[in-house]
Image 1 (cartoon, rainbow, N blue to C red):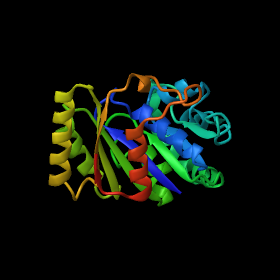
Image 2: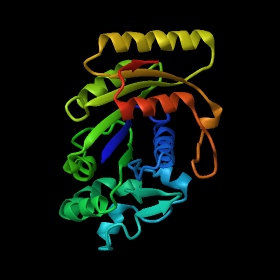
Image 3: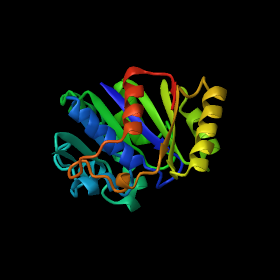
Amino acid sequence: MEAIYVLGVKGGIGKTTFSLYFAKRLSLMGKKVMYIDHDYFSFGCLILGHNDLGLLEEIERNLPIFSRSLKNIDNLYILKLFSNPLNINKNYSLLSNKIPQVLNSILKREVDYIILDSSVGILPDNDIVMALLEELEIEKEGVFLSDMLSVNSTIKYAKLWENNIKYKVLVINMVPPIPENLSEAIKIANEVYNNYKELFNAAIVVQFDEKMYNYNPIIAEYENEKLNSILLSILYRYNTLK
């Protein structure tokens, strides 16, 4: 089992789109995948049609683990964490006594990959991440999403994960399909890749594609060459600049 963390310091830069795309592509490759929606507003679950309770409310109500929070949709396990974004701090402590049950429930499904669709700026010591994924002691890869304006902040953010994630990819996403913008983004990616080889194994530029907006893997047959290259880089641990 491996986990792919999709991370970023800004909202609206494609974390959910990338997470859903990776989950779908891995499933099409014959892998068993669990998508974990850590977004406080559960946007990924909303797209996929999972409108039931989140895991934390499930525990609060003393319901069986994964009885309402986990769905199997289009051959993907979809785990929703939050029901109400206003109550996340109150609910955090609920998980501590249920960690063994939750971990066993994940392990018995024998998934090959866990995709974590993270909330903005989540840190390695986040209670839920530590409980659900750090305890599993599995290989972890990180996709750090940025736009052209937040690369420096993303570098600082990635350094916070340096000891937790071995393989890290910097993605400069949503670059306008204008030659000057693409050239500038490629220049930035080159500089980061050459100056931070100890931090990032790959740096990849992805231009804006309208088809990626509100991407739904259930109803849309869509393939993106750059996202495929990111996924292959992770699967085969390539050191690459694209």
